[in-house]
Image 1 (cartoon, rainbow, N blue to C red):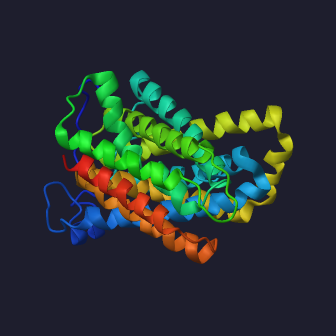
Image 2: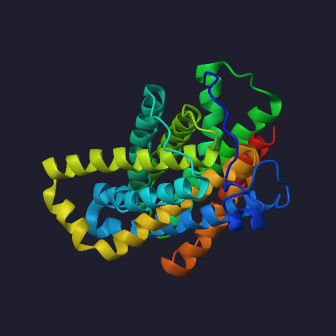
Length: 327
């Protein structure tokens, strides 16, 4: 990624916002060094809830319809977040450059594909197992760097890839009971989802860096709203042209859809705030708590159990990603 503008962290100007002064959310203030961890935990939990909510809607709306819910009903909240941030920082809306639009457009389309693949995979395998597949996103970012940027492969990186790959094989292997047939489809869908999420992360980061504003928070929230707008227009047009019944069903189920939209937009906002305060490596490492969170949701909401071999596979995936991020 070419060098682009660096943004300062501006939450609330000290002279204009009493809350900002009290919390210490201003430039150069380290009074709350643990705040990034709070944002990451909240984002991880919100993402698990959003995935669960969308999974429930898949049975009624189908994969594309449930995917659209996240964007269509998340857009109003993304715009609301942007209004709040602009009012709190008293900064203008940054100019949307061609570079920012290109990065964000690519990321928005990749995220649509990632969400659709994730929900399609969840129709065939358990919620927690597919979540584990998708969490190979961090590992795939490193692989993309190796393939397209020529990044050097260290011994620890090679070990991380090997450990995580073994974990994926263990999770993918069918159970010996229950008559489950061997198939790679859920594994490929889940891993493909992680790959698309990795592309989306790179694109959104590029869009944020391309904006000319002194505040990282303003840049991040602007790109969040822009991405949701692009995704809403694309999927709304697709459903209007090819599946109007599903589009009408989405509005008919507006109550659960609104909740899923809010959860998704809120989780995305928390991710950006965490990245604004701490390195991506630390945030992504802590974000692995999403996998045990998904297990809790799977056990209590979907009544799904995890075989010991699948648990071992998930543990190896987590170990591989942790080793990768700390290599």
